[in-house]
Image 1 (spheres, helix red, strand yellow):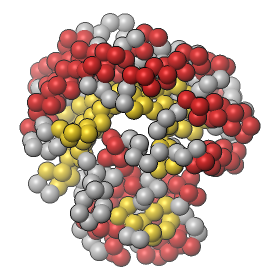
Image 2 (image 1 turned 90 degrees about the vertical axis):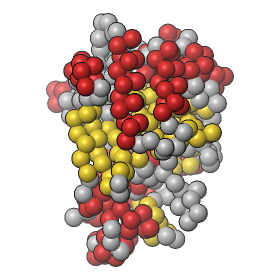
Image 3 (image 1 turned 60 degrees about the vertical axis):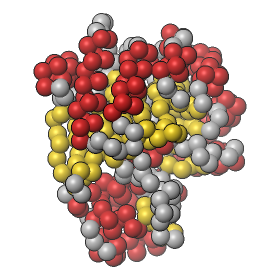
Length: 389
Ligand code: SF4
């Protein structure tokens, strides 16, 4: 916490591993399937981008690292160890640094857990997605429910902290079915769980399947019913809905993701990774080249594959901060709204729109924070569209 009582957003490092065993039909992440990967080349290139960004951010204290993807549990543990060790050489690192690695619950990946822990990883986030056999097949996953739960157990035994993800609001899923699955998941959950509603993203296999009429997504009303039941059930189990899709016991929140949502700074390395860096009072948006092989060639040639490194205009800074911060139950500190926008709160936020959204029960001013209510967070895109005009 800072002296003013506003939590400090921290400084994170995101590392993107763009490879997966197969492509899940709902996935629009920058993930690719390759027969062969030259791990030594990839290790050196990721190290090079880390060094590139360290030059800009010397002296900042790293509060979190996050290996995301793709499937970073397919990385060689030596690569993860080398990246963590290099980060420790390049920056001061907080004593309680959180180092998360996303993992899929297949047996080959579980076998590497101990090596990842020895590399310095202290938290894993497991892509369980469902505990129902048919739904795992529908989601194109390579594990079954028993393997997933074994992986959760192994994560609990190996790492200080762990989380796992489920996807709900699946076609034809009833409230009773979801409640049952959620109860089973809660038997295995510890401090954190992520529960995402199935959405159909452009360019995915599911988009084509829906267009063909293979299945229909749940209607909004049913999905909202499932969301409300989820928040209630998790709350009763002591896991608060600190973010729209993320639930945690106090102190168990994902510190790395809090940095994004609190609009803090983070370095992003690897194909397609984004970053936000405050340099000389300006906020810069960075983005690395997206295609894996081209990224690798560019890094080997230039030492980095930065495609974008642009200052974010003041108005855009405010919009970005609201888009991220209103996802959080804690909301956005008024002082941060004023600092990012460079204006008094009353000028930064349209007062007529704000009054309408407060009257409608979607936003509230709670203490010195602007917050979205549960109803507001449930339809945040519409709330933001009405607020940011
Ligand atoms: S494993 Fe994750 S990143 Fe890879 S295709 Fe599936 S959902 Fe996407």
